[in-house]
Length: 497
Figure 1: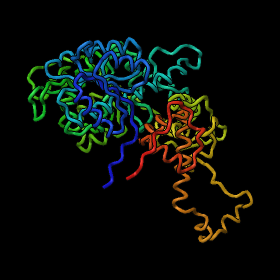
Figure 2 (figure 1 turned 120 degrees about the vertical axis):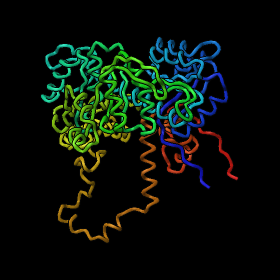
Figure 3 (figure 1 turned 90 degrees about the vertical axis):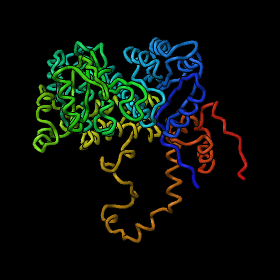
Figure 4 (figure 1 turned 45 degrees about the horizontal axis):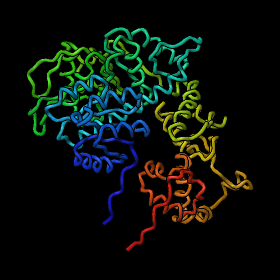
């Protein structure tokens, strides 16, 4: 029976817990989900490691000998590390976990925790980290407007096209208010970036910006995620948990894909907007909250309202001020600027040097349809960075839908190509094993170059073992000079019995 293959690499996680068995359990669970996990029982050793090795996320216990979870969080922030932090707590230290959230931790989970809830919290934390990195990188290059003046601190959206200028003007006017904002537009147009701009430009900028995607959370979990729950509220609720609305107190709550919110929760959200208070699931106490709600959707809420799938009173409450984000195809002058910046961002992430597009690639990007908008552009640029074996990205790497010409023999003109018979075409198709080996060789060579020649990093990125990488290198005849890391010596050969 074949063993299940590990998931694709999703990030680096440091687990800090003085209980050795807890660390082993988390390492096993998270490794199967595609994470590279390093476990520590000593907080000081973990901090020394983090100071030298980049991590995407830290899972830290609250109560530990030597340093507490609060002190670990404070040290991480003092070091200026970009990782997100999730606290792990038992019932007796929940208040300490809540204080950590107020001090900058992303969230907390209570022991014993459910695996699906833990993974959901981790996924949200990593998506938040990804967006922060993209926002920071974009802000570095686009901190000035076309008039040469500095933009207001905290501006997130990029683009100097007239349509983006109108969006910017509206956001700058409404950001200081507390009125609910509804952001509309196609998927991938930058609605979350607009929401972050609204938060950063408001008087709430020192508070938390809490984002939740209403479509990505199972209906059975979304109420407890938003409102929290009291101990004993339902089977498995062994500890009290605060919800995201409560976490956002004093800041901004961003509800992405709000049209997917179940009807019974729409009524509860309406009460939050009207009364500025919540009640946890299974609780009786009324908890006041001071939040500004920004929601977003790529669906027509008016149509959903007429069909009875979205509450009319909630629609009007959310839609006090509406801002529509234009699709990328309607602001083509922004495409080269966005592409160049994504190129710098992805090249840095994959440890490549300075890279650039050929003029033909820029022309192809400018003329594409971009049904996935800015998100599609970002993903394509990352693909091009990984696949390119030189510092210049050329049209040969573009998908055919972007106008990349199919390679043909220079001796064949158009009429000859059209005259090819089906049999001749079949004869030109390589054997499956040859095609597979060719693809694997090109993929691994590009991957190793993008990882600076590090077999360890390539193995993590591909979700493979180092042994498997070395076997492929030997089998496919990949040049050994690609491997540059002195620490990446081949593992000892083992006999197969």
